[in-house]
Length: 305
Image 1 (tube, rainbow, N blue to C red):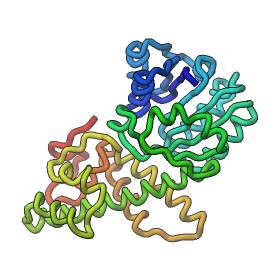
Image 2 (cartoon, rainbow, N blue to C red; image 1 turned 45 degrees about the vertical axis):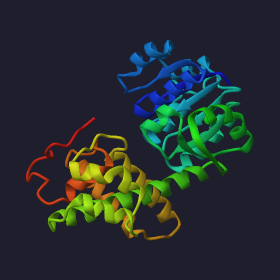
Image 3 (cartoon, one colour; image 1 turned 135 degrees about the vertical axis):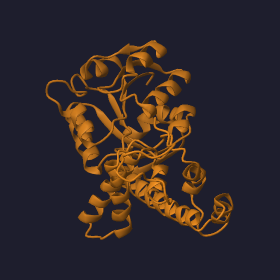
Image 4 (spheres, rainbow, N blue to C red; image 1 turned 120 degrees about the vertical axis):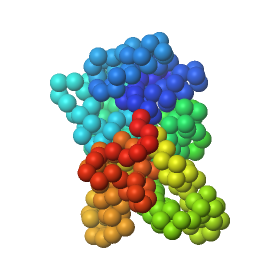
């Protein structure tokens, strides 16, 4: 399993490709229907900038996909005109996008019909971890497919967990992001209220970190919320999408999740205000006093990527 191809080379996919190249894997080709960086990455890694999906599959033993949503994932596997499943017999697909569990199940079935294998490898990490090979991966699919993929997974991640059958890892990832998003919205409200009361926010963050208000989000986003540094590692648009996946699962299970619904509404409000490409920490722009400019779609001093 030495030759790898990538479909989706945005911030995460590109850095995963760089990491594997450094670990001695041959990056055979890269493809992205949208990212303008694909040709430059192909030149950097001395690989082919594939012009169609069938060429991606032909180029490598293993194809890693890192796309944006359900529609994009279905398109790369199910478009009859050009698909990763053309000539896919014997190939291994590792699908890393945060998408609906049912899509992973469908892709596994489609790959099997084409004589290929498919594994979901859901990532609970961000850009720096993709670059240095310390991703946290939750995997779902057939156990033998997981075992086959292990050399590639091991080069990308510091923690690898096999969850179970296809779709189960995506369920866990949806719950991870749902809780993370709720924590992010709650932290923004706490710091926003602290700012309105005139409290010193560095002191407040320190107290949060030593009490029941502590969270991983406090470490990653707390200072950024105060300083309005919303350089994008995980966008508000992705947060809204992922909260929606969790809410769909809740509806199917007959559960009402009011906190998740309220959080999704906040991130959707960011999108409506033109702030969807800010990092999730940008939700603080909705809660800190005096930040939103009435009648406009921009915030002061917020960094976009």
